[in-house]
Amino acid sequence: MIDKVVEDIDAAIDGIEDGATVMIGGFGRAGQPVDLIDALIRHGAKDLEIVSNNAGNGDVGLARLVQLGRIRRIVCSFPRQNDSWHFDAAYRAGEIELELVPQGNLVERIRAAGAGIPAFYTPTGIGTQLYEGAEVREFEGREYVLVEALRADFALVAGFRADRLGNVVYRKTARNFGPAMATAATTTIVQVDEVVPAGALDPEAIPTPGIFVDRVVPVGWRPWMPDGAFAGGLVDVNGEPVEGAR
Amino acid sequence: MVTRISRGELAARVAADIPDGAYVNLGIGAPTLVADHIPGGVEIVLHTENGMLRMGPAPDAAHVDPDLINAGKQAVTELPGAAYFSQAESFGMMRGGHLDVCVLGAFEVSQAGDLANWSTGEPGSIPAVGGAMDLAIGAKAVYVMMDLLTKGGRPKLVAECDYPVTGRRCVSRVYTDHAVFDVVEGGFAVVDAYGDTTVEELERLLGLSLKDAR
Image 1 (spheres, helix red, strand yellow):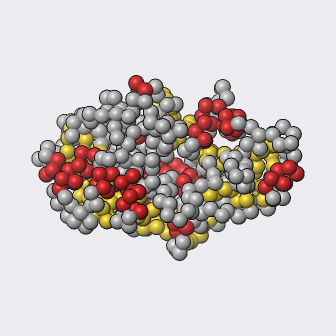
Image 2: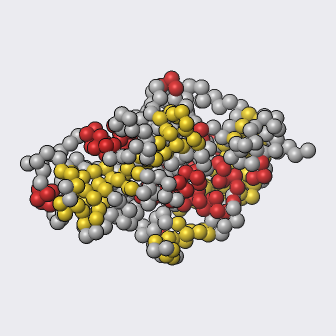
Image 3: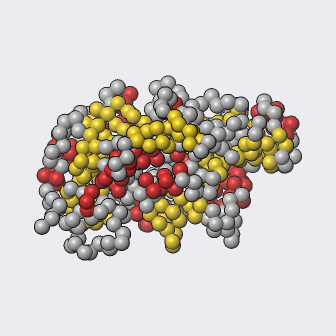
């Protein structure tokens, strides 16, 4: 019987070696697999190359991994934020290498890797300093820049619910990078709030079919969900913390 | 004498040009104010690039949902008929030409329609681009909403961008606190100047020659 559920989260991240490339889902805190990152921190792997949209918020999750000096290189679109102090310090100290990629190119490079496309032409970033010297080609009168697929040894993703077959559904805008990253890693590990019986998920609406998933870890209802309180909190239009979101 | 309008009036000026039924992405910062000024009877669908259509306004504190945020990582709500999707689909909506309008802030816009809004290029600053370069080329119409001059009085409509560009030849129209400009062959055309502001006064402020398309 296929059963991808791993109850012990420390066992679930087993096999991540020093120097591994690890994709970490999430846009800010939404969809960030914080429990898996905490397990990775306990696991101790270092010299990691991380692929993630941001470079950590506040003091937990990815930010903590940065603070502990476990990351050699990070590929991301938006490292600098009002609560990215650990990345800022490591970057300024020259302790972390940064590859900056526009967000849409980042996710498409990940999607391409998972779909067997080694490289593709994109209009995003053409003529900017991020693509100086890159290969350019014209199609139908418009110029495009060639970018390569981005794959990883491991993907750490946060879903909402999953079944033993590894089918995963997400919640609201926490879906973000999960479906693409799940396809692009040799080993994909998904933390979910709960595991449900096979057949309980609507087969018409499975953003991540189980074929892409190797391990599923139930982490329980996220304690910060009911009151919206979590580190790297929500900000209003003036950058001030939203009341009730800490 | 030049007439300037407030940021709220500017948001309303932009909103007045967004057609009924449009799919619209509002950039982080001042452009988000446009959502508050959509005229009655006009229905638009707001896209947020982190993966949602039919995004609604901010919730009250009791209804903040950490899984439901906009591209600025602010709490938002969903309107009936909302849809969630992955990042790949979301940016495909932009590159694929499915969005009608995108409204962005800017440091500078050049006469050719080049946009600079992602980096000040200061030495030692930590770069971050996010979805800026995707948005710059990601809609049928790319509107910029900004002040005409910096706080120091330097024009933000320029012959060539000094700041690192976000996208080339991508801006269609620029809404400022003094006037509205179209990017046309050969430079900027004034399509609307507030109050008694003349094209000559705008030319003097910018040091550029302008077409009058009012």
